[in-house]
Image (cartoon, rainbow over all chains, first blue to last red; front, side, top):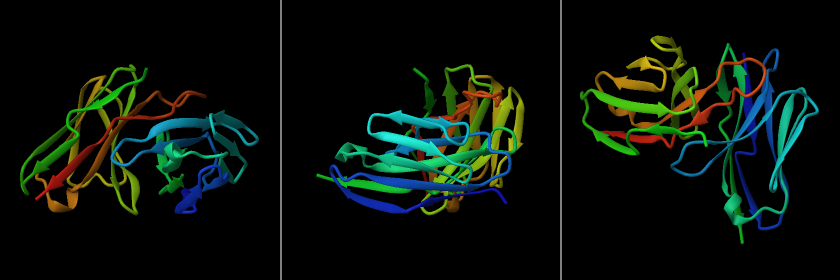
Length: 109
Length: 115
């Protein structure tokens, strides 16, 4: 069964304390992996798509990487405004996505 | 800039009422989706439409129906609202898969409360 698992469920960081979020997946024939950011009470905001193992994408303090079994979202020197829930998703069965349940990140000043 | 809009941010309805949630996208996307999001359960697909008048059931279609009469508009209908349909409803749109650029873009969400 296709599955996406994110860890940890929650992460508390001090401002400037770098860390990584994990997204592991079991899906046959990976066609890409997506990362989203979601603020409380709002819709998910698209961040990155990774299409193949070895690919990396960066945006400000965020860097996403992909292997054959998992993806990491590295957060370098985070700021309080990076606090949000980060979701990953993979495609399955034509154009649908299966989402992980997310990592809730809190960054304290 | 890509844009998906939803008709209401907050909605309060009574049990048994018929509820319409509207979604409009301005990106000329073929695909449109309705999800619900609940704490601990994540995003779950209710219905998917890949073209005008075409639809496909998602993982949790029971109690819902959809309508897509125009490419840019996708409606979710709760025929007879129940308290277990209290949730955050999210609409999304995307291009069909064809190599690259098929990420989904989401609207702001509708927080529906059924009392």
